[in-house]
Image 1 (cartoon, rainbow, N blue to C red):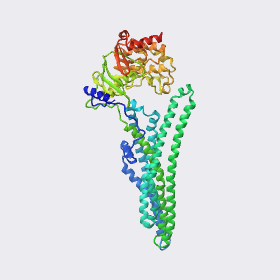
Image 2 (image 1 turned 120 degrees about the horizontal axis):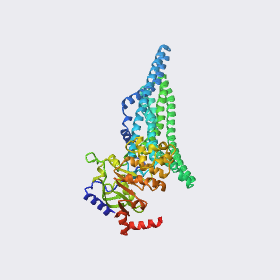
Image 3 (image 1 turned 180 degrees about the horizontal axis):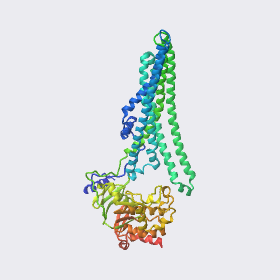
Image 4 (image 1 turned 120 degrees about the vertical axis):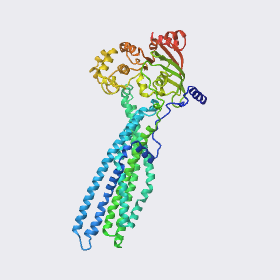
Length: 617
C-alpha cells in the first residue's frame, strides 16, 4: 500500500501537481469539539462577535442592577439603627427619607436590569443568527463524502437545537452569571463592613460548595454532552422515519421502525434524567449551605449583639445579605446546568466548523475564470480513493473534444459515478488532474465551474412549492416566460398541461405529488435552463416510463446538440447513439471507441452488449 501511495505522489509530481495531497474526502464531522469549557466559550464568542459588541456597557448596567440588590439590606440597617432606633427615639422623618431613597434606587436598578437584558437579547440573537448562517454555509461547503459521515437529522439538530441551547444560556444564564457575580462580590464587601466575624462564618458555610464546584461541573458537563448527542440521534431517527414513510408501509416494518424510534427517545430520556439527577445533587448542596448560613447568622449574630459588638440593624441586614448571597449561589447550579448544556451544544456546532473543507476555492492569485463556449474535457493520470480505502480509480486518461457526446459504461461499482463526481468537482482526485479547456478545475472558481458544468442526477431533488418554482431552480433566476419557452422547446407542453394547475401545480414535499419519471423531467428542464457547456447525465432517463422517454428523446437530443455531454449509461441503448463510448472496468478505462467499433472488437463492451441483447429479446 505504501509503495502504491508513493507511486501516486510521484505521478502527481511529474505532472506538476505534487502540492495536492494524495487523499481526498478524508475529513469526518466529529461528534463534538475537544476544546475545554473556557476555550469553547472563547472560540464561540470569537465566531459570533455580535454577542460581545457593546459588552462593557451591558456589564456596567448589569453590575448596577446587581448592586441594587444591596438597597434593601442597607435600608433595613439604616432604618433600624438611625431611624427607629435613633438615640432620641424613633425619627419618622429619617425613616421617610430612607424609604424614598430606597424606592428611587430600586427603580433605577430595575431600569438598568431591563436595559441590560434588552442589550443581551439583541446581541445574542444577532450573534447566534450569524453562527447559524456560518454553520449552515460550512455544511454546504463540505464534500458529499464528509457530509455522509453524519446523519442528516443530526446535522440539522446542530444548526437548530444545539444553537438554541446557546441562546438559552446567553439570554438567561449569561445575565444571571453577570448579576450573580456582582451580587456575590457586593454582598461579601457589605458583610465585611458590618461584621467581619459573621462574614467569615457565612463564607465558611459556602466553602464546601465552592470546593465541590469543579467536580460537579465536570460531571454535569459530561452528562449534557451525552444529552446533546442523544438529541441528534433522536432527531435523525424521527426524520428518517418521516422521509421513508412509504418504504416503511410497503415493507410492513412499522413495528421495527417504532422500536428504533422508541429506543432513540428512551436513550435521550435516560441521558436527560441522568443529567438532571446530577444537577439536583448540586442544587441540594446549595440549599444545605444556605440553611446553614442563615442559622449561623441568627445564632452568632445574637451572641455578638448581646456582647455589643454588632448592632441590631446590622444583624437584620446580615440576614438579608445572606439571602442576597444565597440567591446567586442557589442559581449557580441552574446557571451551571445551562452553561454545560450550552457548551455541549457549542462543541457540536464547533465540530462542524472545525471539519476541513475538501473542495476549496482557488486562491485569487492562481484562479482562472474560463470563457463560456463548447467545452473540452481531459483527465490525466487520475486516481481516486474513498476515505480509508484503496484506490477505486486508477490512472484514468481521457480526452473529450468540444461537442462530443460520450457514454460511460461499466458494471455496478466499476467507478462510473465516481468519475462523474470528479468531473463535477464534488470530490477531488488523489492523483492526477481533471482539466476543463486545458485548465485544472482546481484553478477554476466554483461558481464559474457550476455555470459551465451541470449534472443531471439519476433522481432529481424537488423542493416544496410549485412546478414552476422547481423548474426555475438554478444559479441564475429565470422568468416565467423563459420557463414556458423551455417547456415548449422540450416538447413537454402536454405533460405540463395534464397536471392540475399546470406550472402552478404543487409538487408536494420532496416532489411526492409527481412520479419518479416526472421528477426526472423536472431535472432535465432545469439543466436545459442552466444552458451548460458540459452536461453530465447519470442515466437521466433511467426512471422515465416508455411513453415519457419517447416524448423527451428528441428534447434530450436537442439538449446535447452542440455541447459536450457525458452520460453515465446504465442501459447500453444509450451508448448506441454516442459519439464515443468509454468502458470502465474495475476502476480503469479498458476500452474507448464508437459502439460499432467496440462490438466488433470482442472485448469487455462486446460481452456486455451481447448479454444485454440476450436479456432484452
